[in-house]
Length: 415
Image 1 (cartoon, one colour):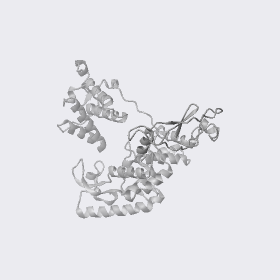
Image 2 (spheres, one colour; image 1 turned 90 degrees about the horizontal axis):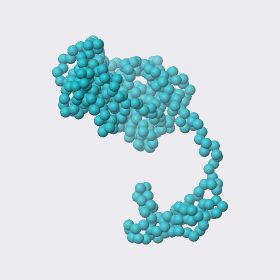
Image 3 (cartoon, rainbow, N blue to C red; image 1 turned 60 degrees about the vertical axis):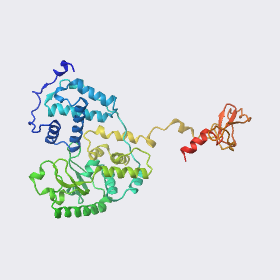
Image 4 (cartoon, rainbow, N blue to C red; image 1 turned 90 degrees about the vertical axis):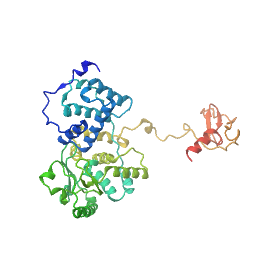
């Protein structure tokens, strides 16, 4: 690397002071800083992954010895060689910027020179009400209830998994979403039709809670420092998960054995199996239920601001994308070809089936086509067939026998 690139790295005297790190190893320093800033576990895992990949890409050299050229080389490799998605590219860039500014405390004067990938604007995938009902029929147990809750409230997958007993307000028919995206709380409706199933789910969860009390386990995970401020809250019923995991697991941060909430991978696999069984021809995920929730509310006549509050969007422009989905299908501009009326009559070709020709040329040969001396109707300049798989070539009819290569190939495909 050129020396000019290294001179751009200098201590950040103007940056806001951060507490000194106690860890010695680089990845441990990244984890320590992420936790001190109260980032989520997923963010911690992603940042550690990209920092490790960056160091390995440059032969285990310390990032302090690397600069703009090395950073751009790594990002270019991700885009050009690995062909990562735009969101993945942005995540890697955010992780490396976090490393330099928050962990190594190094200013990046060339930050604006780093090309940021441009996000592509995509319309969300939305399922119809009939599609959703079919998916629900192929799910059972708590997975089915959880899917119904996501669709009925518009919760994100992580928000639904992290629901506590105290977050369900049956008296007011509301669900309090704590620490949503951006650390914001909001209130959504509690579907009346799901109340009996939710009460049954709480009864099942209470059985697990009682078993944990008898086994003297460490209780559930508590956000921030609430477990130190209220030592007994982790073992209280109101803080227990609405959808707890059946088995105990090791906390990835503290190392304690505790009961986690339902794993997202298990629900995602169940949802994918239901999509296949219901023969849904869309690339849907659990987040599609949230998209469908917003779209169906707008179709029902609810205003955009109400939907924005229920989804927890900071900007109404994010919610406005669902109005574009409403323009699809029956609400879109009518195609001119549909205004012509039924497409029938002498202008539409008719294809019928003809007797097949005997096979020739052995098992691997191609049977010759039969050419009929029957001319086409000169008035319409097309061929009229009374039988056979045929192709029209000018004024003559060319029959394609069943023993031909095309027929044998298609028989293998559709077998």
